[in-house]
Amino acid sequence: MQKIENIVHKNRGTFLTFTEETIRPKSEHIKPSLNLVLCGRRGAGKTSAAKAILGQTELHSVSTSSECVKHQGEVCGRWVSLVELPALYGKPQEAVMEESFRCISLCDPEGVHAFILVLPVGPLTDEDKGELETIQNTFSSPVNDFTMILFTVESDPTAPAVGNFLKENKNIQELCQSCGGRSVVLNIKDKRQITEMLDAVEKIRLYKEPSCYTTEMFAQAQIEKIIKQEKHIITLEAELENWKTKSTVSCK
Image 1 (cartoon, rainbow, N blue to C red):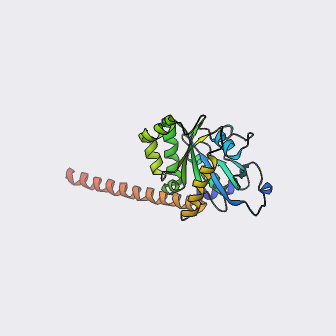
Image 2 (image 1 turned 180 degrees about the horizontal axis):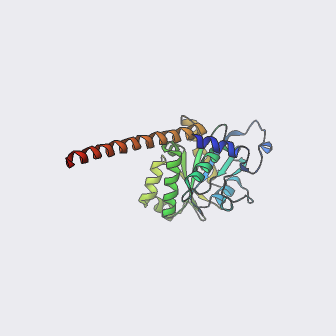
Image 3 (image 1 turned 30 degrees about the vertical axis):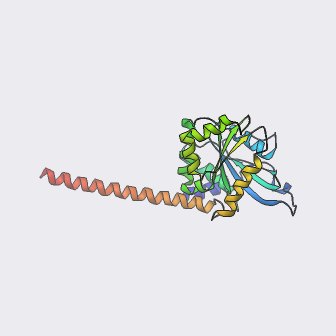
């Protein structure tokens, strides 16, 4: 908990953010806003996905920054905040914790409505698997309830070859099932699937309880990990003591 408090103190007001809240439209007809976190390995295409979703061609790429980047804009009649989370796999634990907490904080006060895992259509790489494991270990199991897979292509997303691959690849199917089957195939050069994706996120917001992943949930996940580690240490110490006792008896 002290580490989380230090991160909060260190990064207060220093998040890398583009497009200020002050430009947000005040229309009475705009739908409820959505806070999304784009995650995935290096080179997965998070910035390309952000450009496609927001319809903005000039966005700062997270690949050139080790910090989270926040983009905002109106999409399909609603205000959308997109936070690009840099790849976590292979980073020191402190950096992983810092960026993970930062991405949640950038969605305060409401929280993250969905984690959008960006994956190019194709077999999962070792880096993909490592990134997935790091995300799940860091945010804990509740993150799966708020995760959607965004498969990206640069061609027709309804092409039989795309659908057949996603249905027949065992690793892809297991991944989708772990996220409640929530997935969308997006042609990053075409915006027609954006509405489908946002509607799926809206279902999470409406039907999940709680409706978003918050900083409190992140903190609770870290507390539970610490408790689990402490219990494991106690178990190991008890086993060691038992082994010492048996060794002493056998030597007599």
